[in-house]
Image (cartoon, rainbow, N blue to C red; front, side, top):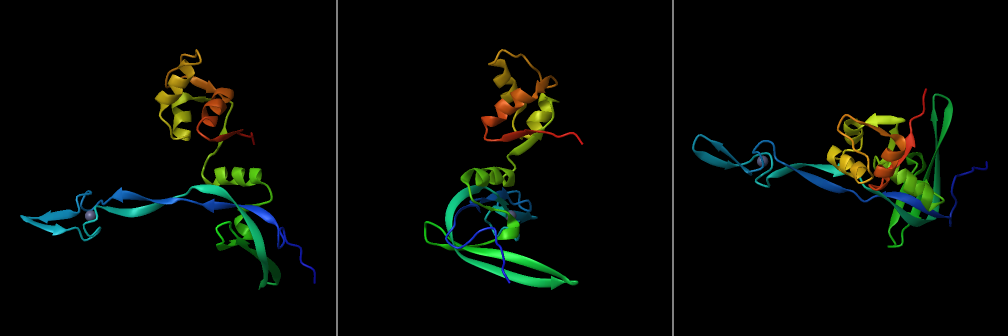
Length: 188
Ligand SMILES: [Zn+2]
């Protein structure tokens, strides 16, 4: 039985590595004070234990990392008579740490360009845009202040307001400066 895998031992690859952080939010129970008061008594907040912050939400931040494949592991399983193949790669980073990457996650590529694109996709930095949008809606889409866009347009001699239309080329150029990749929405 000959099994073809996408990558082989010794291949240099680019992996989208999550370099994200845990963001902190002020505790909702004590409203970020670390204490709660009942009548005249003050107690340490039972939710955050006085830390004032809780709910550490992971903020994803994928970046490409060059690695070398050391091992290819293929497992086959049967599901209702269908054979399914799973491939996992053990990789070596430059810091010498071994990391396993499953094929189905689609985070391993031959070229850096492919990995950069996929990282942006995972980071939510690929935006699909129509031919034109209202400034306010566009700002919402890329989570930036409308004033930033209006100012940017103004500096290019275009006087616009919140409810003015902004064309694809301008949106693309503006968003490029913030590291987004803009693509035209395809019509169904
Ligand atoms: Zn608390």
